[in-house]
Image (cartoon, rainbow, N blue to C red; front, side, top):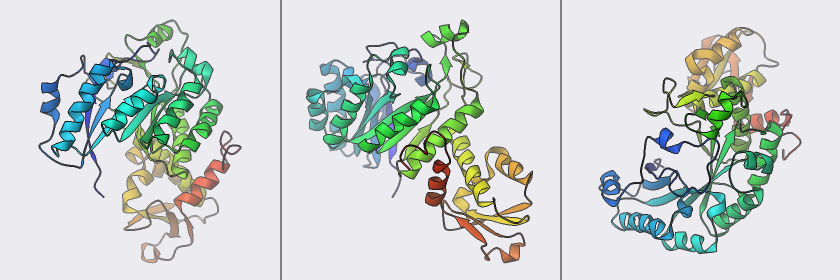
Length: 359
């Protein structure tokens, strides 16, 4: 099945009632005002049910009802004309109720993403979210109970957050069976309350390696439960990049998601190599080769410090890492193999923050 094409419509902070300590959506999106109808029309394709219109930024259901309905009416008309196939939106957990859910249903919204960020009350209060875990649980219930696809957005590196709190929070999210997850490491951005704390030495962001390791394990949990993680790390833009004035500090990398997936693949390779003889060939699906090698070949360099290895790609068994004799002519003689599901279960059983949870 072809991947659905997203048409992102940004309404930065338009419906937000709170000032979260980390938020500068106008900066990260490069959009300074909410779009009018003519601007929306200019973004629409001429036709195609494989397109999905997505209202991002702000808190969509916290917009004035008249404004929210106008955006939904536009989206519905675009779908009736065959220019899009689905409608998605993101919103704040505290701005959903039966009345607003009914409006979303009337206009045929398909997916609702919730900016959850954390499931810990202390962290939520410190972050200025304006609600507690109770509102999150209720909003997830409303979304799933009314037939929408549920999206969950989480953050790492928030003040007072710990790995234990993060994984305990994930355990509470899983019963709601989210259809998609996004994970964003916290960045220190210009013109935010967090920037003031950072300047005063009251907040220290996570180093990149630590953020990758933490998100790797979160990604492993969701992957084990077959919940797609559709984004890890903020999308690089003209305004948000390693050279921009907007970014003051934090674990930003233009290929953050690739770093995470490669880090997890490295753990899988290391696991299958534990009892392997020296001098083996790693066999993996061709589609997995970028993760096997890692960014700039870093995975292979690390493995080569302790093992004499070679790598071959095949056309099948995606997610599986196998070992064969080093001699290329004998690469069909598999001597060990570790599938993705088996690896994830073993790996999470060894994780100090997750092994006591659900596995």
